[in-house]
Amino acid sequence: MTKVVIFDLDGTLIDTPNAIVAAFNATFTGAGLPEREAAAIRRTIGLPLERAFGDLTGVPLTDPAIADFVAGYQAHFRGTILPKAAELVFPGVADGLARLAGLGVTLTVATSKFHRSAMDILTSAGLRDHFEMVVGADQVTRPKPDAESSVIILEALGVAPEDALVVGDTTHDLLMARAAGVGSVAVTYGVHGRELLATAGPELIADTFGEVVRYVDAEVQVS
Image 1 (spheres, rainbow, N blue to C red):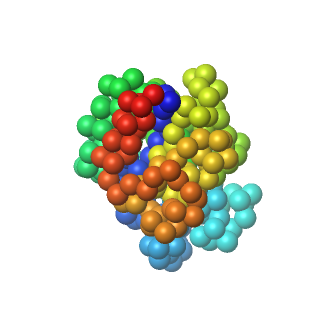
Image 2: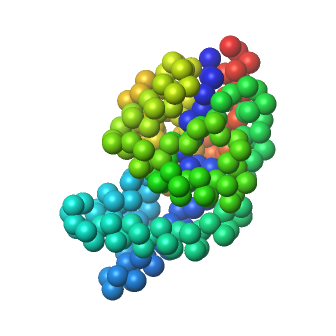
């Protein structure tokens, strides 16, 4: 029985990938570095910011420059993404979350964003009140695709893995679900395409958020 749904944030609930690319490149140019290709940046979405900047620059994670990159990115995030968050909510998400909550399903978020950034964008997008818990990358020692984010949610809510479901747009989300023993649903409208998502073995690959809602609804009705 699906009692808890653990959602990814970027590319699953809110259409932030293009804005994220712009914020990364603004950070690079602000540091006197050349911009990176959009495709290269998009491949890092879903990873913690420190690792993303490390992968894109080749700078060791222990280098103080990584912290500077993260701080610069967060400043651009607050200035460019937050103000238009409500416009970036994917079609069907607001109504779909309300529908799931009405079914008695507990809704949560596990994101590679820092907790404060996640809370800020959910609030600006008008979605915050739907979620019982939000776990950010700075609240875990082993971020996605490790199981820790999901395990924290399950343990806090007292829910067994078989009673939960992860919904995400990258293999990082789906592999987190697998590592935690949780079922998963992939969405194709975010960062990773259908073929790549299929390699992580989700129960469903959905092209719209409405398909996700119908899947969870059916699971609840069967139970």
